[in-house]
Image (cartoon, rainbow, N blue to C red):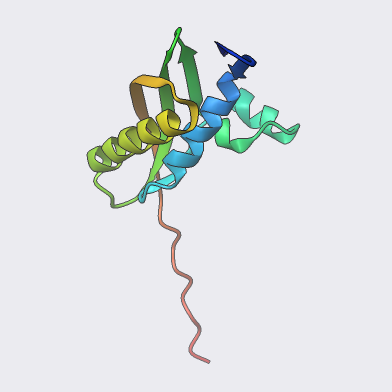
Length: 124
């Protein structure tokens, strides 16, 4: 959690807020199929933890943050391009929303979504 003392009081930004902003930004990148979480995160999601933070770790510094995201990409995309766009989008969104400097955005591509087979139509 980042804590910033202002003239009127203290402003605190939790790791989960930063992770949520990063997750939403990542999901807006064309070619990202979803965030790729662990089994433990999947179970936590069942009891109410937000899906937007799944697969994201946040390391806070004094006035900066480092993020790691695990994603699944859509089949057929150029993975390197999608990962680069995720890095840029997440960095921009987190810096805009929090005022923190983003030191790094590590993107781990954990999977590729497979296209669903088309059902054959019967010719009756």
